[in-house]
Image (cartoon, rainbow, N blue to C red; front, top):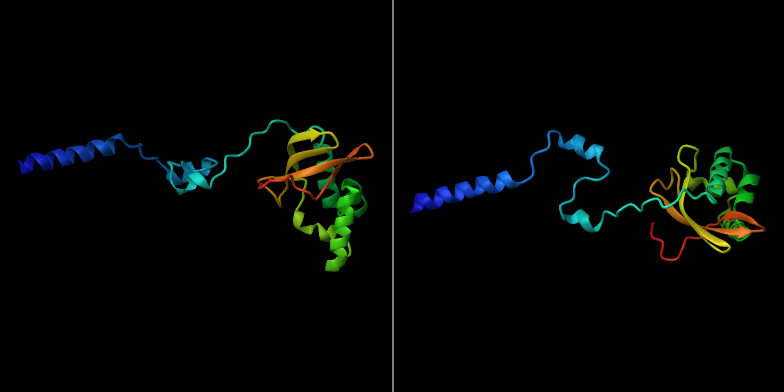
Length: 166
């Protein structure tokens, strides 16, 4: 009887292991080629967000954001001031004065804008306000920003949509 139980236990273990996933030939390479490693309900299930799909390529706001990146790369103070809304410029100037920063270029140095990664997508326009997800080297995963229409032109702001946690 003991032998029968031992054999049954061994056969059960073999069957259970045979029913599992087949081993990957190169686990490191498989992970590197996938955006995220396989998640079988482990601790990453609650912390790995699903990327939002692209619903549009921000046809209205992309030119504004591309102009921002180009101005930032050139360190063109005048162009940067034309791209931002008047409220945003006033807010920037107040903070710059408090912090003793002389130029808008220096103030915006953390943005790390470039021509390498300068994208806008998923624009949503509601009247004179719009939102879009923008990406730069400083925000490679994207960040939601608010744009406003001033004097018939779309302008970038320093505001974030309410509840935007990106």
